[in-house]
Amino acid sequence: MHTLFQVSTSGALVQGIYERAVSSSFLLNYGDFGLGTFDNLDGEMVVLDGSIYQVRSDGTVSKIVDDTGTPFAVVVHFLADQDQTIENAPTFEELTKLCDQYRDSENLFYAFRIDGHFEQVRTRAMKATLDGLPLAKAAAIQPEFDFRDIDGTLVGLWSPQFSSALNVAGYHFHFLSEDRTKGGHLLQCNGRDLRIRVERLNDFHLSLPESEEFLRADLTKDTAKELAYAEQAHKKENL
Image (cartoon, rainbow, N blue to C red; front, side, top):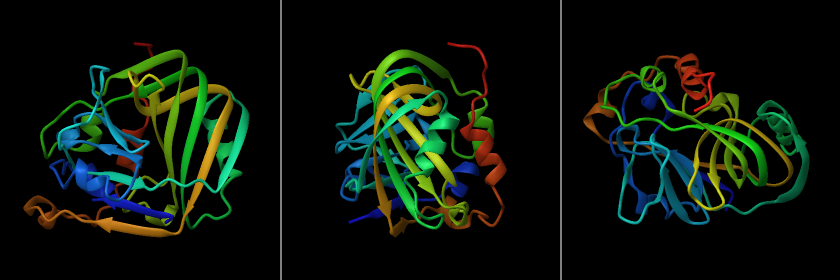
């Protein structure tokens, strides 16, 4: 209980190590809620209510039925210890400030599930790419999407600063619409009367790849700036 299970590291992703580390069926043994990506960065992963969804760069969403590989993912068996309502979140920045109120430490992990109606949601989905292409270059060509007046769920994780060599420090959210047809990595949102559920995570399990590429990679570099660039929006216009 209250355990975060992670496959590989964000540092490996930044360096272009995108090959399969574990299978989707293996991942579901360790959690029913979470996020990640797929082999060769082929879209965004959303794990919700025990199912895995793939949001591809063409905007389509599919439920994973057959076994699929992932080079990076984080999952938990979600069991909220807080359940509250956010009255107004006019921006993603304001939403994260409100989420801060439900964290009592800077040194633990937290899982966030936020359900409700959003006036606007902006997401992106990575395009499939070849191993070895740095994440920053892959992110520069990511398609971005705008959704209006949409019901859905934000699946998120907050990670402490000391974990930055392994994960995205701070908040990391993926979105999935209620009808499971839209989603992606969250860039911006605007919503009201949102239900927020939070789980405090005090146990961390890391599963490392054993591929030749990972074993020989130089993971001593500070990749925080490159990771931050990959996580942000790169287009101003609506799609």
